[in-house]
Amino acid sequence: MTKKEKIKHSLLARMPKDAINQFLSKDKTPVSVLLMSLLVGILAGLVGTYFELAVHFISETRTEWLKSEISHTVPLWLAAFLISGFLAFIGYFLVHRFAPEAAGSGIPEIEGAMDGIRPVRWWRVLPVKFFGGMGALGSGMVLGREGPTVQMGGAIGRMITDIFRIKNDDTKHSLLASGAAGGLAAAFNAPLAGIMFVVEEMRPQFRYSLISIKAVIIASISANIVFRMIKGQDAVITMPQYAPPELPALFLFLLLGVLFGIFGVIFNRLVTFSQDMFTKIHKHIRSRYLLTGTLIGGTFGLLLLYVPELTAGGIWLIPHITNGDYGAGFLLLLFLGRILTTLVCFGSGAPGGIFAPMLALGTLFGYAFGLIARSIYPELDIDAGMFAIAGMGALFAATVRAPITGILLVIEMTNNYYLILPLITTCLGAVIFAQMLGGQPIYSQLLRRSLKNTKLRQEDLPDQQ
Image (cartoon, rainbow, N blue to C red; front, side, top):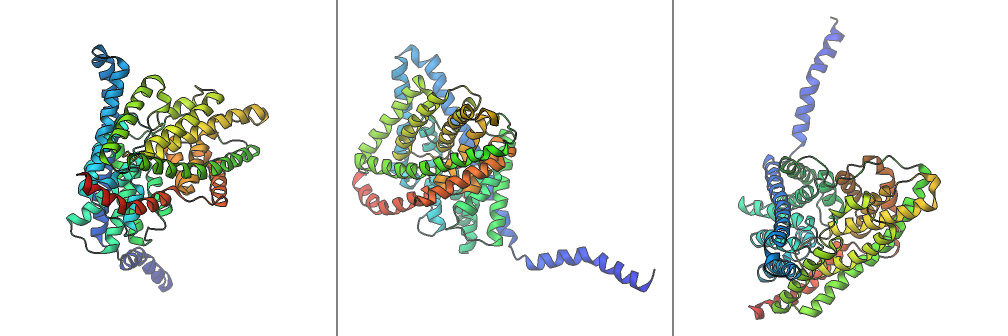
């Protein structure tokens, strides 16, 4: 071996070691932060997964009681009203009595905490959101579990920093964001969407750094692993797998995005309007608040018997839609009906999210649009289910204003990776038109409203004890 070859061989032998040492010397991430983010993700995964199982258990138990026991004693409609009303009462009572910040989705509260303008009382939020959410969602109201799991995940992140007495603000912020990402990953079996939700939707509050990104990724992955160990690795939504549409059909997806961009702006304003209307009704007075919530819950108990398509979060409804169980006319009527029920349930301040109801709305309108488009353009050989999936992402993008998160969320939930191009096209059209119309992201609107009403709520609560 020549001298030149020996030098080259020596350099090649040292390269891996030198590269590792160089990486380690530049990477100043404390191992403790990564370990704590792992712990946050595991706990968020456990809480989020068992929250879903608990809600499912309550819903199934309520149905079994109605069928086998209670219906023999009292009329079925009365039993349904009373059971759902009682479950809803539990949710509303826990929120109003112990943790008003647990009302609604909870995501704006986490965003406010990341911005340093909202406290995280995890010792109250965790039990209230878990058991209150069980009651509200178990009653059949049109609410989703993703908002509660994001808030509970964020609360777990703050709990860990308090337990370990972390003083560094950046570390506390990173673990709070990590918990939120883990919560979403566990809610929808969507680790990429959990990461991107924090990075994209919470971009005004999220402090970008190598440490925070690592922590969010670790928490999201670990939470999702916990979910899959308990629930399995199947996609959350079971639906057909679609081939990519023909390229000439992409203009239809863009048109669908435009329509959702317009609707997204209107929908966001309707959400805050409904919240204001309910505030005028109950005026933060506990007796009025509980009576209103109980009546709403009881009403949805009746709807569960006679029009179940108008109840619950709507994830269960999506496979029925995409399998072609309904015609375009009925889908559009159901779309309008679920807009109303979503506004009633979410606007009332029940502890539940709005992700799942929005996904159901996007599916309803998207599939109806697909049926109409197929009848107009039969030569394109399109499947209406493609537009249902695109509609899910488009409404999310238009309302939350996080298109990449919407794309990843829908792909991970449905396992339809071949629809990436039409999804991007639809979400892009939705976001552009929502911005052109001056719409604001829904969680930013909700956070501003929460901050505005906090002082009034604090003044009213002591008089109601």
